[in-house]
Image (spheres, rainbow, N blue to C red):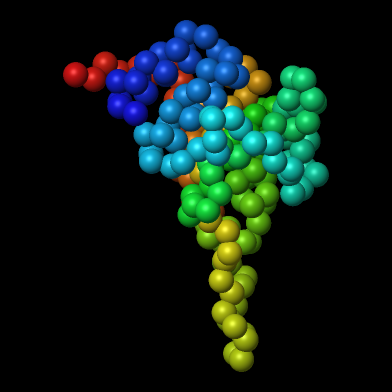
Length: 164
C-alpha cells in the first residue's frame, strides 16, 4: 500500500460517505501499517463486554446488533477494533477505549493496582488496541490510540493532500 493509494481511498471516502468506503479505507490503513487483517478484509463482529457500550453503539443495518468489529488477525500484539458510535462524545469514547477492553489490555491504567508483597506482580495479558471509530453518517474515520488516561486522536475527514 502506497501513500498515493491511501490518498485515493481517502478521496473516495470524501466523495461517497458509506460504510463500505469507511471500511475500505480502514483496511487500507491496516495494510499501510503492516498489520494483518482478519482475512478477506471482512470485519468480524464482536460482543461488547459492557451493557453501557451496547447502548452507545449504532445498530447494524441488517441485524440490528451493536456495530463493534475486529479488523486485525489473531496472534498479533496490536488489535484493531472498528466501532460505529451513535454520537462522537467523550463519554462514548471513554467507554469504548477504557472500559470495554478492561484491565487485561497492555494500555490499561494501573492506578490503584499495588504490588502486594509475596504475590505475583500484575501483568496484563491482552495486546495493545487501536480503535477505528465512525458515526452513522460515515463521514469520517477516527483513530484512537491510548495509554492509560492519555488518548491520541487522529481524524480523517475532508482532507486530501497531493503527494509527489
